[in-house]
Image (cartoon, rainbow, N blue to C red; front, side):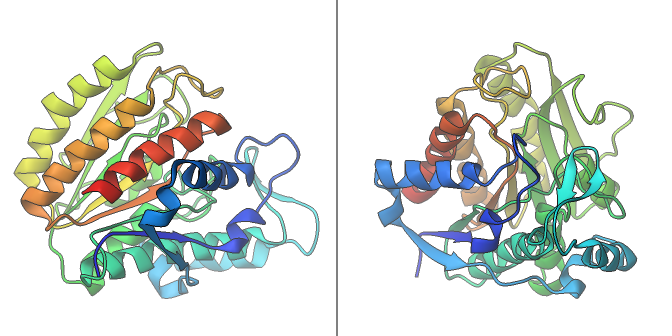
Length: 308
C-alpha cells in the first residue's frame, strides 16, 4: 500500500478551551470541509488515531508531567494550565490521541504502508516543553514522533521542519544538541513565545522573519538555509510541524504567506525526502486560526503530499 494516510480522532473535536478561543474544534471541521469540496478526501486513506502510551510520551516529556496532566483533567468546566491553555473533560483524551496519531503515522510510513501521512489533530504540540504546557499545547506531538522513530524504527537521523508562525520552543528544548535530530524553522519575531534567536544549538536552523514578510522572504530562507542543512543532515524521515498561521489572513500574527507558499515548501520537502528518506514524511497540524485560510492552506499542503 502506498499513498497518503490521514489520521485523526473524534476526541480532537471535543477538546474546547472556552467560547471565542482561537484554537477551536472548527479548525478541524474547516480542513475536513475543504478536503471534501476539493475532492482530496477520495485520495487519502483514513485512520483513527490510537491512544499514545505513557511510555511513548515520556520519551520527550518528564513522566511526572504526564501523570500531572492526567490528574489535572477536570470532571466539568475548564482547568487552566497557563493563561492560553485549558483542559475540559475531553482534553486529556484528545492530547493522548493527538500524540498517538503521530506515533501511528511514523509506524505506517516507516513500515512501508504509506509514503506519507498527515495528522489532523488538536491540541497542537510544538510549544509544549518537557515539563510545561503552554501556547495551546499539552504534549509535543512532533517530538513524540521523532523520539518514536529513533527508538523503535532504528533511524539514526530525522529532521523536523516547522513553518508555524510561532517558534517551536518546546521542540527545540527537547532536541537541542541531539545530533540525530535537525530542526529547521521559520517564525515571526518578535512574537510569542519570544524565543529562537538567542544562541541556538548547532542542530537548530532558526530563521526569524519580520512582520509583513511573505512568500519571497520565506522561499529565500528555505532555499538558502533549510535545504542545504537538510541535504547535509541526510534525514531518514522528515517530520513537519504544519502550522498555517503565517497566512496573510491569520488574526494572531503578521506574516503574509498564501496557499501557494505552503504548496511550494511541501514540494521542496518532498524532494528532500525523495533524495534521503525514501520519500517518508509525517506532517502534523500546529497553528492556523483563520478558518477559511486554514482549510485552503492545509488542502494545498495535502494536495502535494497526495500527488507525490
